[in-house]
Length: 297
Image (cartoon, rainbow, N blue to C red):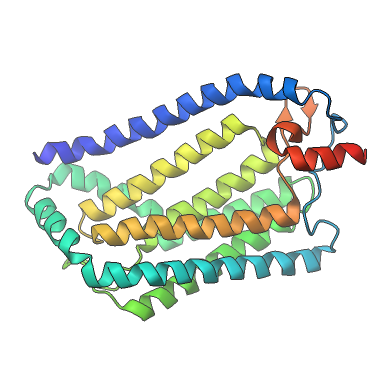
């Protein structure tokens, strides 16, 4: 029985990437039909390096940064509210699920597999995620075509907002973790950070260097795989209760959505970049914006 839990890790990884593969094939088949259906729509000039304008795209960079940070703060407050409501359920009733899972894993843990998980789980550690955010901010500040101020600001904000919002939740509930990790664990910071930090980095890279739907699907699969790995490893090693790990994945997803929405409102929809040059195919990605942008070109 203990090896079934070990096999769960590769099995879920196969499922995640199989789903991504199937969705990619379906998206590849649907794009030509969507392009034919929108053939009468005027297109933006090929080779453009500019994305269609966002809601706040006309603002100076300082004002745009302030508006983006304001939207991020609002999103973080909403995420905090959702997690606070969920915390009432998890903290008071979670042990009915958590304790049996923890006890079973303690008596069925495979030492060699635990050693591997102990290495893989470090991808969600604070300093690992913070270092990834700083490195990505520096690289994208140099390589982005426009709004080079955006990656450093948003990736700095993700460190600050995630840290203090998580601390607020920890102080609100002060839930004790498993015996091997008794400090407050609701929600799992490691699971939250993997989804939020690597998901945001993947989104920023995607919108600047690809913008294609199939790339988005594969990037999402990688982030989902990293999130599952973090949740699985933390629970397997007894570092978090099961409900704390699951809550961390939800928490990270909520914060990631807030950051993506804020970036999109300031920077506009993504630009699809393909072989012979940059091209905006918003008729497929964003029909409404495409119609408005084409009329004005």
